[in-house]
Image (tube, rainbow, N blue to C red; front, side, top):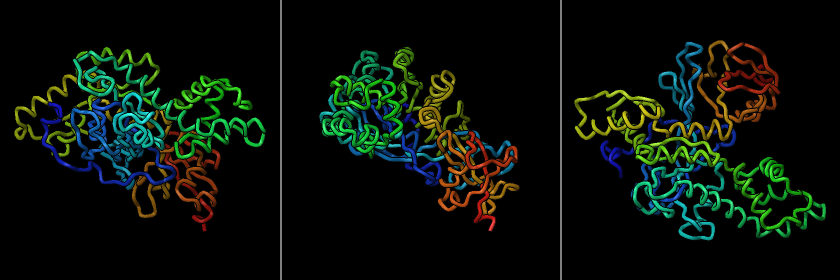
Length: 427
């Protein structure tokens, strides 16, 4: 437990009592990394689910699942209305939409071979659509997560090790049937795309991922029997990167070597977010106690009850403000979650309504729902996501900003407010 977290009174709670989005497939982001990097602190800060936090490897023995939030400006301000959110929360014009996060136990080199608690935890991220890799940017932990001298470990090694572990994990899964798959493709009875999609079912790896990986590697999809072992690993490495996109949360950014290391991590061709999970957790706990006014992702906070703060708490908050918020603009926790969904997964937010005039549902709730959907979603696809019957009876939709009628193939934009007209609704 760090100074910042210890300085705020602990309490077990959920910040926003709203259900996770249930429309369509709920996307899940995995929080991964080696032991003792601050993963569990990041997870607790993001979800406020109480988990065991300690400075030794394998604190997290079973994966923790929880609800975090993506943060986006709500459209209520544009329409100058008071909204009544149902599946999300709106605070001062900021819409917080629940999403699922999973905190996987720390991986160590050789995990794919079963070392440590390896395969058990690799299996836990099989359904993750994207990954947030928590890296000890200050270099205070070695390759196995044991404490070492500040700055003595290169965090880039941790990124490369995780890449290898995941690629070899995929190889271990595929090699069981690779000879059979290659022969089947060679006989012309099945194509490689279909067979690999089936083999990786349950791992959130899609046919489009396989096709893109083959395109990038320029390997012969019609004669995989000619692939060498190196070709196979090369293909799986690219497939891993496409199907499990990852960003780096450069944690412990408040420690001296971390900022320089974070810049070097960008050379590995990942999005890198400077992060101090401990500071976010302290602010979230202080906000719950109403000691400060703070929303996840804010660049500042306001002390609400200065007389109730101890000298230690005041000092901790001052450290957060000066070393983190003023320097980096945020603690990085909310930014990492937002980027995982909006950048890695290319999602947008849309607001379905029923009553166009009042921007409400049938119960009169204004802008009740905010849905996270993939970029490229059409009006009719949104209707299907809401309800199969609504999709089947779709006639047209109306976008509330321009009050313009749109057809079934119209591609929705971020922040669209959409009223769907169906045959059932007309009847």
